[in-house]
Structure formats: structure tokens, C-alpha cells
Image (cartoon, rainbow, N blue to C red):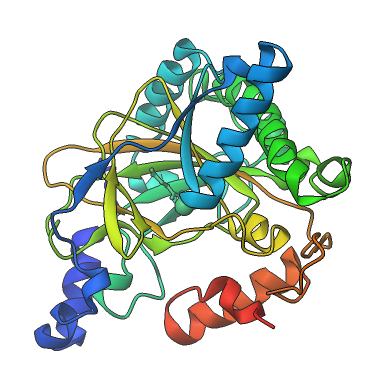
Length: 336
Ligand SMILES: O=C(O)CCC(=O)C(=O)O
Ligand SMILES: [Fe+2]
């Protein structure tokens, strides 16, 4: 039985609905083109344990990377290569289940819309993502079906380490902002974060369709492991740069809520994944989120750039924008 979602049929239908001219004449930003490769700032987290001087230096590097890049990579992060390998194997096995099974409501015994693919709202190819994903809320992990070999125990092991890492990084980033020390303890209980397992299938139209369309993340920060295939691109200083994969490293990026909390000092920058025709690509992302009604607002003394909001308001606004325009508008909706 086929495991691939019907990406090709949907793209053909979109192309038929639009004139070809319209589908191909998108904004320059949205075109798939050759881009330069970059190496993200690389931070060795073992330095945090080397005493005050090295520790402070490492914390400064983290805050600087968040301000200048919005993206960085970390090594010695505590997630073993064994867990990473095992996660990739489990992901491959999971995504290679028949498509008809994956779309079943109770496939993982988690929320009914846990399996997602493409973009149901896409009206043109540049809004379509040639990828599939499982969104797994941290609360759902203990009750997940485990007839998929050791998927659940692997996810548990991964989340256990990565959730602690997310909190630690958030606290380090919050320190120079004057955010109260227990802000994340109070506003980001473990149950509010989630994991996304991504699979980017080989793509029939790699020059026209992205694996994942350009977006910023709706969270405080995201921790990603990408495999060796590559394809992640970030929008920095007016141009797209390809992130060179580093199998040892985890990629960390600032989400919209840290940009608001830091009053724009840390950057939630646009990123996307380009498709390839040849091979599949796997990645796993942990989204560190506040609870629905936690208030996100500038904690410094300067005048605020954004009005305060909650995740509930933000998600509602995003839903409206996606329905009306096919895309998330994001933080600019909350500009003062
Ligand atoms: O697959 C990747 O490398 C990035 C995924 C991503 O940006 C996301 O899931 O929000
Ligand atoms: Fe993202």
C-alpha cells in the first residue's frame, strides 16, 4: 500500500485552477533558487559548566546569536547520538506506514488532527508544503499507541532531554532582558509544548514547491534536529541562506514570543525548507510554548513595540489570517 500522501495530484489540481502564469510569477522571496550555504553560530554548551568566566561567555554568545541571527546550533546538548539515530529510524518506520492508516483518527491514539500533510488552504503552489508531519503534544505521549515498535519510548527519551534544554536556553536568554526568574516555570508548564516529526518526501516539482513554506514559529523557541540531507534555509539580511547540516548539533531558533518578550531584541526570523527530487528528508522539532492564557509582553523599560497578547489570541488571529490569505501574518498583527 502506498505511504505517500497525494502531493502530486493536489499540486496538479492547484495548477489547473490557477493560470500557469499566476502560479509561477510569485514574489522573488518565494522563488526556489540556488542560495549560499552558511554555518550558523556554533555554541558548545559544555562551557556552561566550566565556571563563571566560561559560563558567562557562553551565555553571552547565546544571547548574541539570538539577536544577530535568530538561529544558532548547539553541541554537547545532552541528547545522545543513540537517541537521535533511534528517532530517525522510528520516524522512517512511522511515515512509511500506509497513507490510509496515517490519516485514521486514532492512528497514534492522540488528537485527531495529529497527522498533517500539504496545506488544505493553499490556493497556489507557493503556499503548498510538500511534506507530512505528526504533531504530538507532550501530554499525549504517555497514552500514545506503541504498536509502532519503540516509537513512544524514543520520543519520551528525546523529549525528556530536549524539554530541559529548551527551558535552560529560555532562562539564559531571558536573563539580560529583566524577565522575572520564574517566568518560564510559571508560564510554560511541560504539557503546553509539542513535538513535530517531519518528513519531506522527494518532490516532483522541486523548483516550484517548497518542502515547508516560509514561516516564523509560534512559540518561544524551537529546537530542531535535521538529518544530513539539508534543505533548511533562513532569511537573513535580505537574502536566503542554506543551513549546513551538522549531525552532532541541534538547531535552535527564536520564535515569535521571544521576539515580543525581548521587544524585538531577539529575532524570530523567516525560515523554510526546500525540496529535493532525489531523497526523503527527516527532521524533528520541539516547540517550547506558553500555556494558552499566559501573557506575553515586553519586559524591559523601553516603549513596547508589540501589544501584549496570549497564545490563545495569537492562534485565533493566525487562524483568521490563514483562512483569509492562505498565510500566517504573525507578530506584525500585534504591532503598537
Ligand atoms: O525541518 C526543518 O528543518 C525545520 C522545520 C520547521 O521549521 C518547523 O517545523 O517549524
Ligand atoms: Fe519552523
